[in-house]
Image (tube, rainbow, N blue to C red; front, side, top):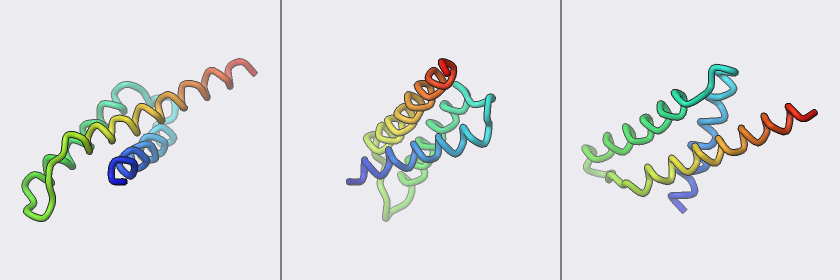
Length: 81
């Protein structure tokens, strides 16, 4: 499914971005990733063989937030050790 591919791709992007930024990863990084997702959709609007889809962007956001939840749970669990 296309939406699952969007979510997985943006989860991986969030993972890579968080590991690149380390402790600097936070709200700004999430906003940047969301902006990247909407930028991709806007570019597709102007391409005749592609199409803009709000649902694709929502799937991107779901992927980002799934990673964010995993990332926060991991941090809490590591602090307890």
